[in-house]
Amino acid sequence: TLNDFPCADELVGALRKHLPASGNIRVLDKGAGSGDFASSLRKKMGADGNRLDITTIGLTHGLTKENRKMVNTERIGIGLNMSHRAKYHVIVDFVGEDWHLPKPLLKASIVKSVSLLEKGGELFTIIRISDKSSEHNFSLREFDAWSESLIFEKDIAGVEYKMHRQGG
Image (cartoon, rainbow, N blue to C red; front, top):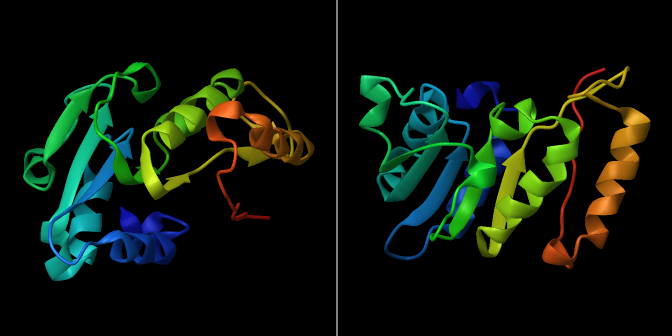
């Protein structure tokens, strides 16, 4: 749920910042699972939650019946491989696709997500870092080098980003 997301307040702030005077804001939830995160996000936004146009991507039709009511569009597949037509104001991947991807595919996923953002849009994702490197986990040293390499990706050149580190 949103309460478990390490940057929940920042995410809600970003959503409020992108809300137009009228109309909706487009949100993509990558790796949506049961839809608990999207549902809790809409509820947390209160009256403004009705102005969220939420699209979820999951490997299966995993949204619960209750959460399906909170989502505008449900897509099935792997976001990295999907052909998207829409642009989004905010993309969230809370322990979804990026968390589960092997390291060699992670940069492509980040670049793909950034390409789907409206100008000034924001991407929130969680990347595994641990004391030991593995197929999915970066060591801190590896991650520092990897994150620095993002600035050289031509498809996202000029994009501003900041990292939040959490844990011991």
